[in-house]
Length: 187
Image (cartoon, rainbow, N blue to C red):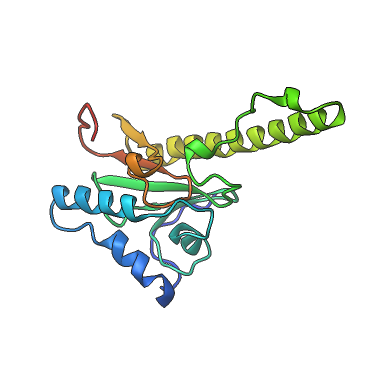
């Protein structure tokens, strides 16, 4: 059964303060926020190392949790870009630092023979299935949280990927934005 909560949890870990400063630096105006986020994304190093989100999952950094179950955590963004701005993250990354890291079957299995091909295909299908399951869980949770937040008139889901996609935290996550009229084209 999912836990729906509001409030802060955990305590801040001093070793995470520099990353927290980068993430909290998007203050004042939307233009400043966008510039800071872009700077953070360009400064971020793509890696499978623990991130600020791992620290939030482990309760080392406080967050305003709005939804939690065994697989997913959803919490309010510290620099909201809309009246409702919630981040939805998987508790286990499984190598998914971004959407582009979803495992896809690789052509060229003809380089393998016999049992190697069977093993490769089995492992590839297993990764793909797990990654699709994680992404599906994130999107389904977004729907649940949007309903919980009263976003019946609509909302936007965003997944930033890579430096040019303005990804600043390399832990797959979905931004749920709502509570105002969205514009097109985005960013």
